[in-house]
Length: 377
Image 1 (tube, rainbow, N blue to C red):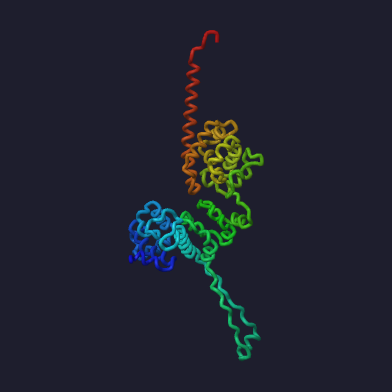
Image 2 (cartoon, rainbow, N blue to C red; image 1 turned 30 degrees about the vertical axis):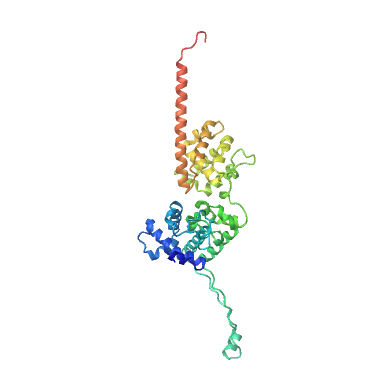
């Protein structure tokens, strides 16, 4: 019997840990540069201690499954065809992934949230009771045994445990650490809807947390149509101002003092119904992305050209070109600064197209003006 086969004869969870500590760790040690200098015996703990390295390990598994074909196997000694296929240990690959995600999160939360657990102090007897004990007239009552109170990190892990299931959550573990157990409990499975680190970060803000615990939808986590007026064909300037403040929009645009930001809000609020109709769907209905796109357009175009393109008399062909560019992707993700840079690159192409269009039209008009008139005209 091989060492790998022997590992699958024990308890399923212990079997998984044994293979992870030995065969899987050996593969990771040989193929992940981040582990090259780590002693082989410490690879398993090093991976689970660092969400970044665990994310790299999952990526290696998905991109180069042939490296694991002899250690991640089904009862027929084949590499699983899907995450739901049972492995030789009796569990599925999806269950193994969840086991690793939970182990990594638990270690990270315990390390990051080092606050002391509350200490239970049993009530002290009163003066007469103490005197009776001293004189031997009474016996001390045995104190009930209470389980040790959980640390802050353990409380967060217990609240989140059932929702730590997927490898895409691993990079979010450091951001999860800022959430409160009460918020996680209130969210429940809804936590899995937040895959964007920025959105998870927003969850940790006090006002957002309070709203979610109370069952309300925070503004920045809502859909883009919350920006619109009741008629749905224009932007509510007051709501737009609130979104800008919450997104700290002025910090994204150097030189935007309060007066300039209000000027930008006024211009963006005047965005045409045609522009709203074309751009809102392709931006995914996310209120942050939609607001960031419009403000970046204002920053790139300037107030005059913004009105020419996205205002009441905007050019439909230009809006359609912008919408097609957004739809081609890639999807906006990352920090607000990173998304703004991507949008700027898209809009720079739009500015060039506008300039070329204006030059072409000017040339056409010059040619028309230089043509001789027909007799009698």
